[in-house]
Length: 169
Image (cartoon, rainbow, N blue to C red; front, side, top):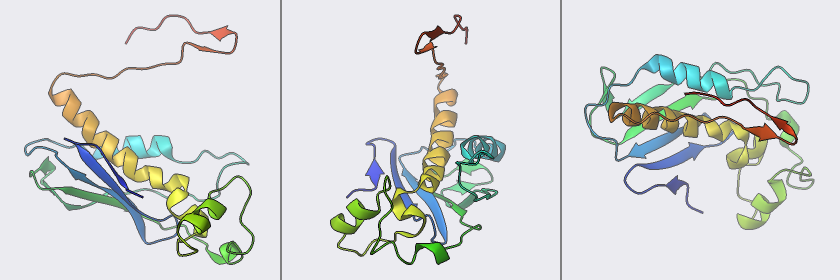
Protein backbone atom coordinates (compact mmCIF):
# COMPACT_ATOMS: atom_id res chain seq x y z
CA UNK A 1 0.00 0.00 0.00
CA UNK A 2 1.33 3.42 -0.91
CA UNK A 3 0.79 6.28 1.50
CA UNK A 4 1.71 8.91 -1.10
CA UNK A 5 -0.37 10.66 -3.77
CA UNK A 6 0.37 13.28 -6.38
CA UNK A 7 2.98 13.99 -9.02
CA UNK A 8 4.19 17.61 -9.01
CA UNK A 9 2.88 18.27 -5.49
CA UNK A 10 3.36 14.90 -3.81
CA UNK A 11 2.14 14.18 -0.30
CA UNK A 12 2.92 11.19 1.90
CA UNK A 13 0.86 10.65 5.01
CA UNK A 14 2.40 9.06 8.11
CA UNK A 15 1.51 8.00 11.64
CA UNK A 16 -1.20 6.04 13.42
CA UNK A 17 -4.10 7.10 15.61
CA UNK A 18 -2.43 5.99 18.85
CA UNK A 19 1.20 6.47 17.79
CA UNK A 20 3.22 9.53 18.83
CA UNK A 21 2.01 11.70 15.93
CA UNK A 22 0.32 11.94 12.55
CA UNK A 23 1.48 14.13 9.71
CA UNK A 24 2.55 14.64 6.15
CA UNK A 25 5.64 15.00 3.99
CA UNK A 26 5.13 17.32 1.03
CA UNK A 27 7.53 17.18 -1.90
CA UNK A 28 7.27 19.65 -4.77
CA UNK A 29 6.40 22.82 -2.89
CA UNK A 30 8.49 25.67 -4.31
CA UNK A 31 10.78 27.89 -2.24
CA UNK A 32 9.44 31.29 -1.25
CA UNK A 33 5.85 30.40 -0.34
CA UNK A 34 4.80 32.30 2.78
CA UNK A 35 2.79 30.15 5.18
CA UNK A 36 0.46 31.63 7.78
CA UNK A 37 0.48 29.31 10.80
CA UNK A 38 -2.90 30.73 11.83
CA UNK A 39 -4.37 29.20 8.66
CA UNK A 40 -3.22 25.75 9.81
CA UNK A 41 -4.94 26.39 13.16
CA UNK A 42 -8.21 27.43 11.46
CA UNK A 43 -8.23 24.50 9.05
CA UNK A 44 -7.36 21.93 11.73
CA UNK A 45 -10.05 23.33 14.02
CA UNK A 46 -12.59 22.73 11.23
CA UNK A 47 -11.66 19.01 11.07
CA UNK A 48 -11.74 18.51 14.84
CA UNK A 49 -14.49 16.19 16.11
CA UNK A 50 -17.68 17.90 17.19
CA UNK A 51 -19.05 17.61 20.71
CA UNK A 52 -21.65 15.03 19.65
CA UNK A 53 -22.54 11.80 21.49
CA UNK A 54 -21.66 9.71 18.43
CA UNK A 55 -18.31 11.44 17.94
CA UNK A 56 -14.98 10.45 19.44
CA UNK A 57 -14.29 11.53 22.99
CA UNK A 58 -10.76 12.59 22.01
CA UNK A 59 -10.15 16.30 22.35
CA UNK A 60 -6.76 17.33 21.02
CA UNK A 61 -5.47 20.81 20.32
CA UNK A 62 -3.66 20.07 17.09
CA UNK A 63 -0.56 22.25 17.04
CA UNK A 64 1.45 21.93 13.82
CA UNK A 65 5.14 21.18 14.28
CA UNK A 66 7.32 21.91 11.27
CA UNK A 67 10.31 19.56 11.10
CA UNK A 68 11.72 20.64 7.74
CA UNK A 69 11.18 22.75 4.64
CA UNK A 70 10.12 26.01 6.31
CA UNK A 71 12.28 28.81 7.71
CA UNK A 72 10.73 31.97 9.20
CA UNK A 73 7.29 30.92 7.87
CA UNK A 74 8.60 30.69 4.27
CA UNK A 75 9.16 27.44 2.38
CA UNK A 76 12.78 26.65 1.50
CA UNK A 77 12.24 24.30 -1.45
CA UNK A 78 13.17 21.25 0.64
CA UNK A 79 10.47 18.67 1.35
CA UNK A 80 8.12 19.85 4.08
CA UNK A 81 7.64 17.55 7.05
CA UNK A 82 4.82 18.67 9.32
CA UNK A 83 3.00 16.86 12.11
CA UNK A 84 0.62 17.07 15.03
CA UNK A 85 1.20 15.06 18.17
CA UNK A 86 -1.37 12.60 19.51
CA UNK A 87 -1.92 13.80 23.08
CA UNK A 88 -5.30 12.30 24.10
CA UNK A 89 -4.75 8.57 23.65
CA UNK A 90 -6.14 5.64 25.67
CA UNK A 91 -5.13 2.34 24.07
CA UNK A 92 -6.36 0.14 26.93
CA UNK A 93 -9.67 -0.72 25.24
CA UNK A 94 -8.06 -2.03 22.05
CA UNK A 95 -6.24 -5.13 23.36
CA UNK A 96 -8.88 -7.60 22.08
CA UNK A 97 -9.17 -6.26 18.52
CA UNK A 98 -6.95 -8.99 17.10
CA UNK A 99 -9.53 -11.55 18.19
CA UNK A 100 -12.69 -9.42 17.92
CA UNK A 101 -12.58 -6.85 15.12
CA UNK A 102 -15.12 -4.04 15.34
CA UNK A 103 -17.97 -4.13 12.80
CA UNK A 104 -17.89 -1.24 10.36
CA UNK A 105 -14.20 -0.55 10.97
CA UNK A 106 -11.07 -1.52 9.02
CA UNK A 107 -9.79 -3.83 11.79
CA UNK A 108 -10.39 -7.12 9.98
CA UNK A 109 -9.33 -6.00 6.47
CA UNK A 110 -6.16 -4.49 7.99
CA UNK A 111 -5.50 -7.72 9.87
CA UNK A 112 -5.84 -9.76 6.66
CA UNK A 113 -3.89 -7.35 4.44
CA UNK A 114 -0.98 -6.87 6.84
CA UNK A 115 -0.92 -10.34 8.39
CA UNK A 116 -1.83 -9.13 11.86
CA UNK A 117 1.12 -6.72 11.99
CA UNK A 118 -0.70 -3.39 11.69
CA UNK A 119 -1.43 -1.18 14.69
CA UNK A 120 -5.19 -1.47 15.23
CA UNK A 121 -5.35 0.82 18.29
CA UNK A 122 -7.83 3.58 17.58
CA UNK A 123 -8.11 2.39 13.98
CA UNK A 124 -4.37 2.82 13.35
CA UNK A 125 -3.73 4.06 9.79
CA UNK A 126 -7.47 3.86 9.08
CA UNK A 127 -8.57 6.33 11.75
CA UNK A 128 -10.14 9.70 11.01
CA UNK A 129 -7.18 11.09 12.95
CA UNK A 130 -5.02 10.49 9.86
CA UNK A 131 -6.91 13.27 8.07
CA UNK A 132 -4.95 15.85 10.10
CA UNK A 133 -1.98 15.31 7.75
CA UNK A 134 -4.20 15.77 4.71
CA UNK A 135 -5.59 18.99 6.18
CA UNK A 136 -2.04 20.27 6.70
CA UNK A 137 -1.22 19.45 3.06
CA UNK A 138 -4.43 21.15 1.95
CA UNK A 139 -3.49 24.31 3.83
CA UNK A 140 -0.13 24.42 2.03
CA UNK A 141 -1.81 23.73 -1.34
CA UNK A 142 -4.36 26.48 -0.67
CA UNK A 143 -1.54 28.99 0.02
CA UNK A 144 0.22 27.93 -3.18
CA UNK A 145 -2.97 28.29 -5.25
CA UNK A 146 -3.74 31.70 -3.72
CA UNK A 147 -0.22 32.86 -4.67
CA UNK A 148 -0.97 32.16 -8.35
CA UNK A 149 -4.46 33.69 -8.23
CA UNK A 150 -6.58 30.54 -7.90
CA UNK A 151 -9.44 30.70 -5.40
CA UNK A 152 -11.42 27.55 -4.63
CA UNK A 153 -15.11 27.88 -3.78
CA UNK A 154 -17.67 25.12 -3.31
CA UNK A 155 -21.07 24.66 -1.73
CA UNK A 156 -23.91 22.14 -1.65
CA UNK A 157 -26.73 22.96 -4.04
CA UNK A 158 -29.24 20.41 -2.77
CA UNK A 159 -29.79 17.55 -0.39
CA UNK A 160 -32.72 15.35 -1.31
CA UNK A 161 -35.57 17.66 -2.25
CA UNK A 162 -34.17 20.68 -0.40
CA UNK A 163 -32.49 23.15 -2.73
CA UNK A 164 -30.22 26.02 -1.66
CA UNK A 165 -30.45 29.50 -3.13
CA UNK A 166 -27.76 30.46 -5.62
CA UNK A 167 -24.57 31.49 -3.87
CA UNK A 168 -21.94 33.99 -4.99
CA UNK A 169 -18.27 33.38 -4.10
